[in-house]
Image 1: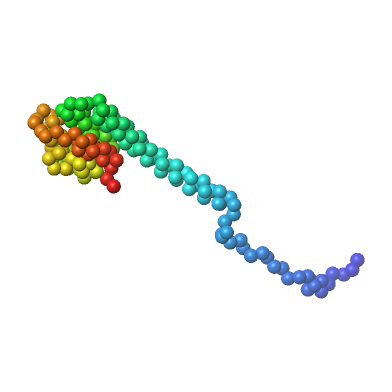
Image 2 (image 1 turned 45 degrees about the vertical axis):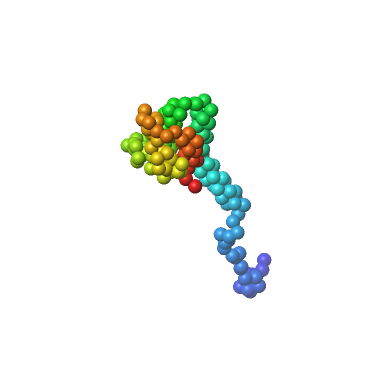
Length: 153
C-alpha cells in the first residue's frame, strides 16, 4: 500500500454546490393548488349569489301570474303590495323594511329600482290596496314592481 500524500487532495476538482432553488417559476403542484383555490373562490361566490337569483326569479314569476290572473285593479294593488313587501323583507331584511310605510315605503322602493312608483303612482297604489280612492295605473304599478325586483342599475 502506498502512503497517503496530501497531493491527491489538490488534484480533486473544487466543490460546486448547485444554486439554491428559486421560488419562481412555480412547481406544477403549486399551479394546480392555485387553480383549485381560484375555482373554489368562484364557486363560493356563485353560491352566495344564487339565493338572490332564485328569489328574484320567483318574484318575477309571481308578478307575471298576478298580471294575467288579477283583472281587478284593487285586488292587483293589494296583491302587488304584499308581493313587493315579502320580496323586500327577504332581500333587505326585516329590520330594514318592517318600519317603512306610506311615503317612506314608496321612497324605499323607488330608491331600489322601482322608479315607476315615484310621485302619485306609488301613493295611488297604496290607496287602492288599502281601500282608498285612486287613479289606477296598472301598467306603471307592474313596471315599478318588476324594476324593483330586478334592482337598481
